[in-house]
Image (cartoon, rainbow, N blue to C red; front, side, top):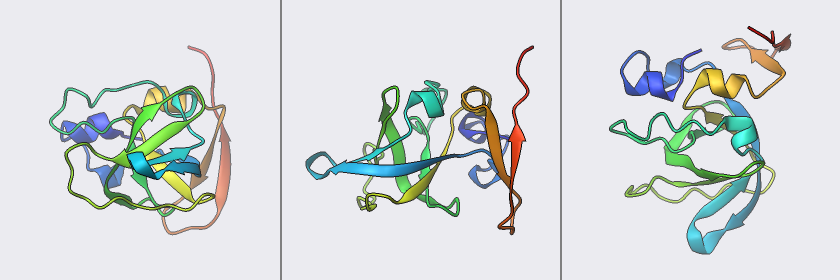
Length: 140
């Protein structure tokens, strides 16, 4: 499915990443430039595989519902059930104001670790509105 670590070493482009986590905006802290989402490390994983790459992607790149990345918007922090999205440290990109209830897609650092957090996948083919559900195989 590819992921941000693979994109960071040139194996794929960000646009090739086929896995994302759908999250909902649940609040803001404007004085800090934070937007809260209902996806923390239980949804995204704690993998920080891009931290030592030239571009640190935090806990994932934030995209609109269609999968288009917002400029320099990443998940900067996570706790168990919630994440904080903000503009990448050092970026001059404008802060994005996402309304409470808005849906975003998070591209993960590590597809395997993120995928393993979920018991099923909702699969949508490119150019289609049809959603299929795949149950995840468990065990080794």
